Length: 227
Image: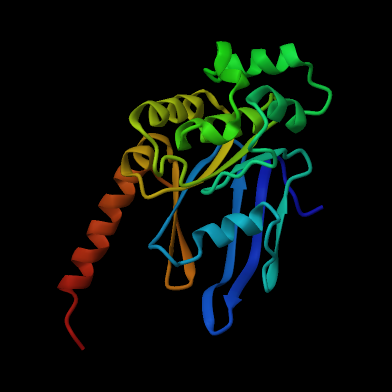
């Protein structure tokens, strides 16, 4: 009942700690359809933890996280694992999408640039970039309207990076991604969430404008009289 219109995600007063380490507290944010949000911050601030709470792998200590009733999400984690690494690509694809024929699986794989004999390789021999691409192929379908990526361009070669960028470019749903990759953030983010000092500051703008605002904040801080 709390959801309005095309609200995709509601984060209400969320807190998370591990022992004595307080990652964040009292975070409240909402996401509407079609937004492209970059979650940025230093290592160890809790970016991946927040993502895992959004996809239901972890739970907040306080507060609640809800996705809208029409939301169908796909999550590409930083570390890609497959249930059947010794199976080939077609077999993995069919296991991921129940009721998919071998031919349909091959057609989907071809759309993600896996063709010919390559589809009969065991998944374990693929490069990191190929594994990301395969995982995305297994996740994505026409119903996915909320895509969540954790460091999608980390450890990728140039070809795989370009491929991931094109896939994100072609996707027209709501996007939330964690990244340190300035080029990627600059290209895709329409909103920046900066996680620092246990809270998220929401900048409703792209990366270039965010950096200008940060520079201005720093300049004002430097100019302020010392107490």
